[in-house]
Image 1: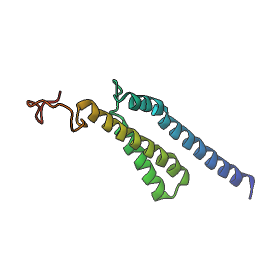
Image 2 (image 1 turned 180 degrees about the vertical axis):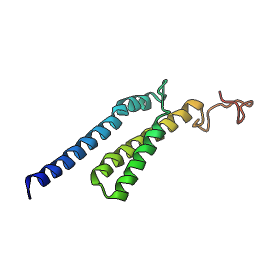
Image 3 (image 1 turned 90 degrees about the vertical axis):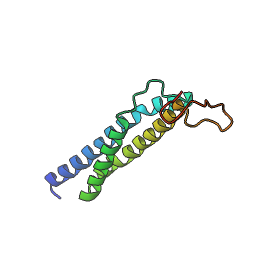
Image 4 (image 1 turned 180 degrees about the horizontal axis):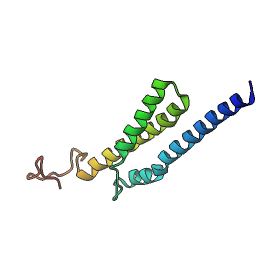
Length: 119
């Protein structure tokens, strides 16, 4: 192999590894916040609106990486999509607890509560 081919291979794998580390690292930034909210049992003002967007974006990049056969793109988007899916599921679980939807069967309920009225 000549020097130019070696440089291209090193740049491809170097930038690929850098992309994986950056994307997965950015996805894991919210880990401690979500874990703390889960421990408290409440979102506590945590804005979870962008979580589904991040999940779908990483899922699309993963599918694109699979379709073109790029391992680094797949490694960059796949684990990040799983992390954002985990965050979305935790957010939905915590929101439903805050809304009172996961009450214990023996807990007191109000007669006036209907589909449109939440406590």
